[in-house]
Image (cartoon, rainbow, N blue to C red; front, side, top):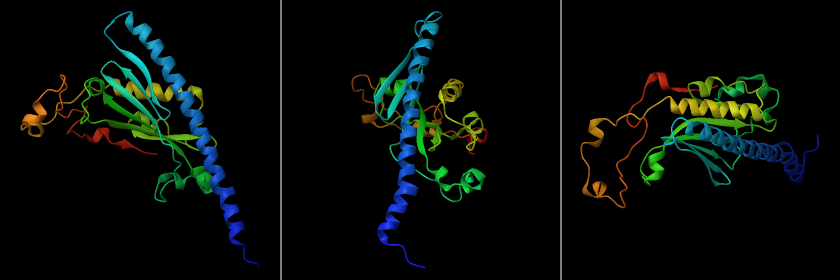
Length: 230
C-alpha cells in the first residue's frame, strides 16, 4: 500500500479537523450573539416591571467586549464570557461514553461560554480582590448541540448533548435558570479567622473603595452545592 504524502496528510487533517473547528467557532459566535440579544431583552423587560414595585432595583445589560457581556440584577452581576478557542474533552470525560461522540468524534469539538456570578458592589467599588463564582460552562458543537457543566439545575437540566440544540428558546431558558440560581443565594459572611487580621493598607480607603475580599460563598463549601456534570 502506497504511503500517503505529508501534504495529503496535512490536507486530510485540515478537512477533518480544522474545518470542523471553524464551523464550531461560527456556531458559538452565532449563539453568543443570540445570547446577547436575549440578555438585552430580558434586562429591558425586567427593569420596566421591577420599577413598578421598587425603583431602587437596578437591572442593566452591558456589553464589555466582543467576548463578554454583563447582566446586573440588583446585588448580583452575571458575567457571560465566550472563549475564543475551540476545545475537545479529555478521554476520561463522560461525553466519550455517548454514542453521539463514538459515532462521530468531530461532535466533540466545542466552543465554550462561561457564566460567572459576582457581587455588583465588587464592580461598583472596584474591589479587585473580590471573588467571582463559576456557575456554568456551556459547550456548543458544530451542529449547535450543547450541554452544560454547572451548579445544581444548571448541570442536570442541560445534559442531553446528542439531542439538545441551543436555539433561541433554549438560550432564554438557560439564562433564566442562571438568573434564578443566582438570586436564590445570599452572600455568606467570611469565616471569622479569615478576616480577624487586616493590614493598615487594606483598611485605608481609596476614594471610598474597600479592599477586604468578599464573595458570595467565600470560605464555605456545602456538599449539596457540588458541581453537576453530564
